[in-house]
Length: 308
Image (cartoon, rainbow, N blue to C red; front, side, top):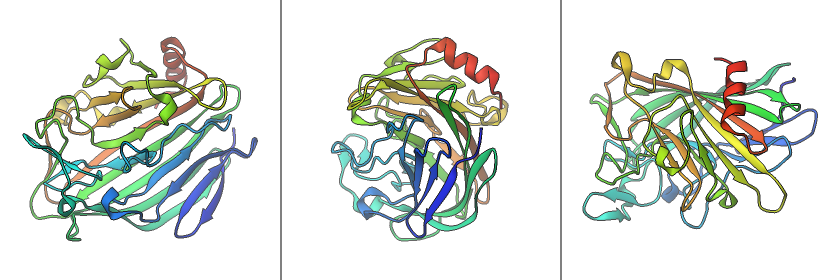
């Protein structure tokens, strides 16, 4: 296994390329985009080792869905997710005065060695009026590129520090009153072809896994244009303590296969997460990108062979 090659288009994006195949595994885009879509850095396109794209970008149903990104759909009254804002009793409203953004500040490190490629970035979080609400230190690492298994991994680590003098309150449409819409935090939007794909968890499968807790969740979809499937596995790091034990905030899976493919290990599905002034919210995840339709046994075996 060797670390990907890096191509940096300064001011726009960083692309990581598999050395053996020449496939562009992902592009990390940090140039700001439309204000209505809550500008923020994101990963798109993301590809399998066969070159098939496994992320969606600005779909007609939700223009603010962009690949794999870190979001805050309800944050102390602000919307850093993009688009309309859910208001209980009124539905989704066009409230541009609530739409904020996340801004790239600098890269502390961009490099690749024999094992992995690293993007280490600093960002700031802002409501619509531009005030500084949070700092974030983010690390994206691409590693375990394995042609034999037909898979590779992305580890995403974020540490968000509250810079206000009052608590930051992370919520979701569900904490605001909408059922089964607990999205916030790391969010993956799949390509349109992945609609009605297979949702797999350690102990079950299907749309009924919405709002449940588990150390991992997988989504398998079938490509348009080329034959075959791909599977993405989203995995909590042990320190995330998704169960909410030992005083940590519980995480629940947001997952849909209809009307679109989407997965988020939600920070605040059923209850708000309050981050005190100066406190740091730390989360770490792995995303396994695999060719083929993996089943539960294959996923479990893969994760057992590659522990945290």
